[in-house]
Image (cartoon, rainbow, N blue to C red; front, side):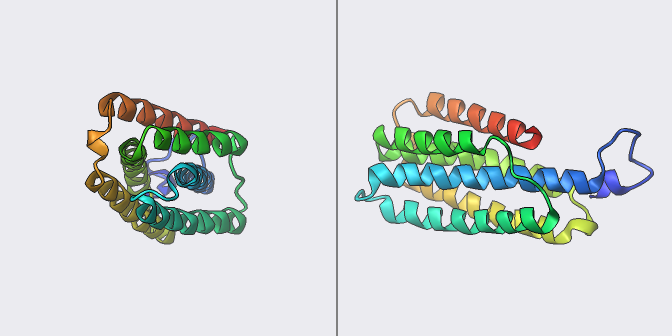
Length: 185
């Protein structure tokens, strides 16, 4: 972690690099867990819809991301967020709720979440230095797949969802709050 690992730039009271890496892994695990639950909610409603194969593909990628962060939690001795039971319910509710509004609303949910994740992963990648090259490479790889999900959802008509701007803004706000909380709790 370049900025915090450099004795010239670290300030008294700055968290240790190992703590910051564990915090990143915790929040990324929480995010991938939430994404899994969103897609499970969408598939529960849209299992026979035209968009179902695309949702399943995105879901399978999220499962791979989640497994990777689960393994990192164990390898690094980091703990998952204490809010996981909340993300379990909230993720499914968000996925099912937007799917009940229609396929385009479910896709609007995907776009909103993935745009926030793109920003989040980009910020993390900027913070990681040579000492965390593997973690940075993982974050960049997963970030590209999240952008693929966003592009898929846009191609499926996400922006034509009724109330797209309001729905998107609400989901982005909730996603940013979930990130902030999961980093800390």
